[in-house]
Image (cartoon, rainbow, N blue to C red; front, side, top):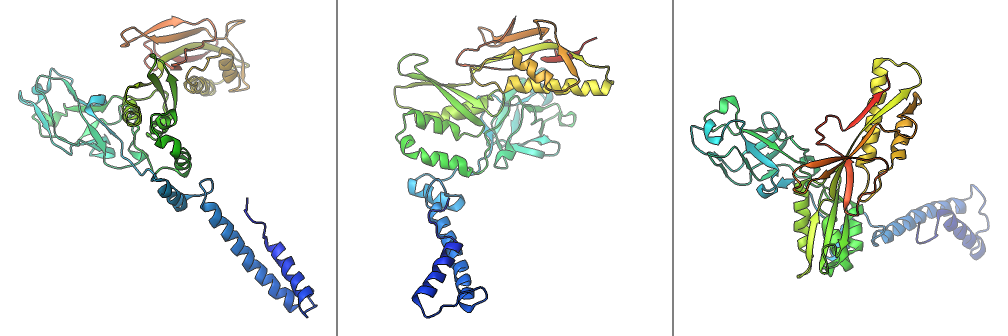
Amino acid sequence: MPLFSETESKIFGDVIYDIVNETNITRASPGSKARTIASALSRKLGRMWGQFDLNIVQSYLTGAEGHYLDLVGIMLGASRLGETPASTTASQRIVKFYVDVSNFASINSGGSIYLPRGTIISSQPYSGGVRYRLPYAVILPSDQTEMYVPAEAISAGSISNVGANQLVYHDFIDYTDALNGTLKVTNEAEILVGADVESDANYRFRLANRTVSAEAANETAIRLAALVVPGVADVITLPYFRGIGSYDLLIKATTPRPPPGLIAAVKEAVSRVTAYGIVSNVRAPVDLGMSLVATVVFRRRLSAAEQANILSTVTNNVTDYINNLDIAEDFIVNEVVERVMGTSDLIKNMGSAGKPLDNLWLHTPSTLEDTKVRSNILSDYLPEADAKLSVEDRYAGGTPILIKAAE
């Protein structure tokens, strides 16, 4: 909305009024010289007022964009965040070299393997696709079968992010059994900390909270420190979760489950603004998996291709519903029914009376947290304040969301 109301039509009206009433020129009808000059002058002044309005707006945080927003940030002492490459450390246990045989010595004439700095790890053969490199030399001990290594993306930005098990190629061949390619590599989790140049919206949000966050040791500072980490969608703080002088920070990632590397990056960022004597615990929500079986009834007999397509769409819709549940958000059976029935008009019904789902299971972490325990659920489920439901991706029984057609 303009700060001033000097539109072209108003300027034109004022000029014509002044000419007719304050000069000896009395003819201002269409086609007259006075009217032509006034019209040209009004257009020029109108554009100037518009530019003036735009310049004024760009000097305020709410209206500034691009370079002008950068200038506001400079005044507040907070520069825009630039591109950052994705990376991971050995302690995060994401990227590893391994062998399927007894140990590294068995593929290198009994000795350890020396990986030089700059060894390329990539998502496609011959160093193609997304490429990472070792930031320093690594020795694979002769008596080990696997070893986690650090890795940093060669290219900056979100294009350097990769999903789990994508980095499966490397260019190292200086070991005895290189012809057989027995030295293998993979990334066991997503690497999502690569970021593009900070957007105007994110930068404006940071600047708007600059004064409060600059004090540090407060919730705003903690939230902002976590939110600027690439891959973080939002965070939830649980004050006094472990007693007075403590808080838990739950990470909501852009993926259904926060990868280990993301949690480590948030921990590092938050540690810079957490006060001395405050115990913080940055973590993912308690991971509760869900799996289910449902039977749908069609209105008529369908071809195999048509039926398979509908069942696939139903499965995707149910999966999206569960994976998009927020932390502590209820799982509602009727919502699943609505997603299924709304997929196609050819679906007549699902399940049986009073039991729309054939089976519904909850997968909760065991005490040791190295496996999960499956239990039956009879109806809706309300997770705890620090728990999040998602489709169980480690379901030993096969497909976690199984939608089938009635016989």
